[in-house]
Image (cartoon, rainbow, N blue to C red; front, side, top):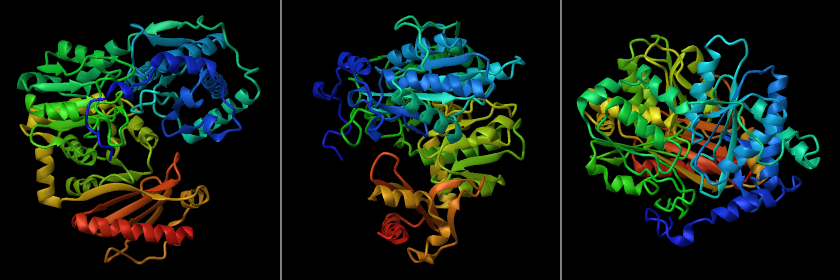
Length: 542
């Protein structure tokens, strides 16, 4: 824990935006260096121009690869493109437009030439593709999400509107690295600064106007509850202003500042500026003002994540809010199919399992990554899909798809709907859940592992776990494939009646992550964590 965690950034914490942008254009990656290659994680390619991980060459090559990929897939409709407020996002969008123009791709960008949240791009893709056009649209979002100000990010959403699957991202990354290694000779591109959109699309208007079909805004307006909405300097700032004005909400946009240095932010747990709306340190300013509002919420830079702050509890643990949201939605959305399942990731709280059982709904447990929820949200067989890292989306009132990417604006508005309709904050409702089901303790820690050990863990089979008990309880499941869709989890999950742990390799550091939860208490959780490390290390031969 950094000694200044939760305090406002100082001048020495801020980046030099001009130097950052200059590095984007001036530095050229060496793809023989693994740190400088194009690598698509669960949310696209990310990195900083300062360490030659996110530069003009990367974006030109990735965009050309996307052009080739969509052509091979027969995608001929418009490509929707949006960007967030990070300093590298506009230069990267400019580069992408230059490549897309040279390849003859029809590109629709924001009508206001402004910032576009990730869910608004997903919403636009889906709206186009269900409108009966003879072709299909896809999209690009230029964002590193909640990452620090020096980072850039670039992600591709195919016609289903959600995050691209690993088959697509793997092909795109490999092709991009080939193009860079070839000196970008096969990258088509108009002159620098000559990239322009083919057309404009009012992402904000279409998204905000459609919210009445997924959130009970009338109930929020009539209740008069006082709402604080903090965009954390991100792409949602102008969206919250329009939502407030369009629907007559008693809302204050807590901070309307946009600064690519994020000088107004409080430092996260490790002393870095990070727009993590689920972190009590990054959200310290809003938490401090929690008594000024009946409920307040935050979003990260591209608004695909949510944070909920209540006067009675401060910032809610994302797992706690997911459980409350699920119980509320499945009891109130009468237009949803009675067969619509509850989607959760393997490392989300088992409180969700208990809620699902109590309300008689199928639990659909999948590996980490929002992409797994996409098919179910598209066809309505999954009503709600949520991740432990404060990302979720759910269906419209009529049971049809809203977005297939995480929607932090939606989940923030839902918190206000819950208060307006029930008269209770989400944290008060969670306290009621703990009275019924118990009070779980959840934590994620890291353990050291070499690259070789991480590779073993990623492919480890549950049968390789020799232990029969965990923290004194019999083990009832050893999972290497998710129960919901039988997809490999890239690690293992071990379950007892009162606790569980999951171990997954980190994609960026020489550690593996241990997620663990106990319904007994903190001491039992510590026992689970300690035994988890021994169990995994034994399986890895450590």
